[in-house]
Length: 117
Image 1 (cartoon, one colour):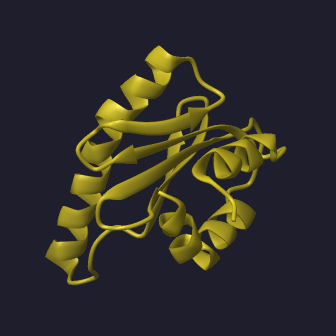
Image 2 (cartoon, helix red, strand yellow):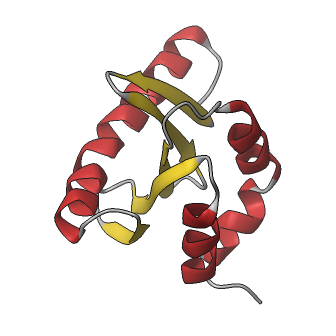
């Protein structure tokens, strides 16, 4: 059976992925690939705020909590995916990568990914 480390290595090996971070909604870093330890900790610290904002928007519109969000940042794209009610996955895409294929795979395999954490 694959492990969380296997997942992180597989994600980071994709040509469309620059880095990946798995974290708790409390901001605790669980695992990361493609970032320094300090950068991974920083991503883990700020990502829960993104999820909280998305959950609040979903509550206000009646659409429910965050599933997946694609963020367009100044120099690239990032995907924030809720693997479960307690665990988030943040993936920074490689330059010029399209988010569609990754988003489809994350949505399709969400339950299997959550089971690894």
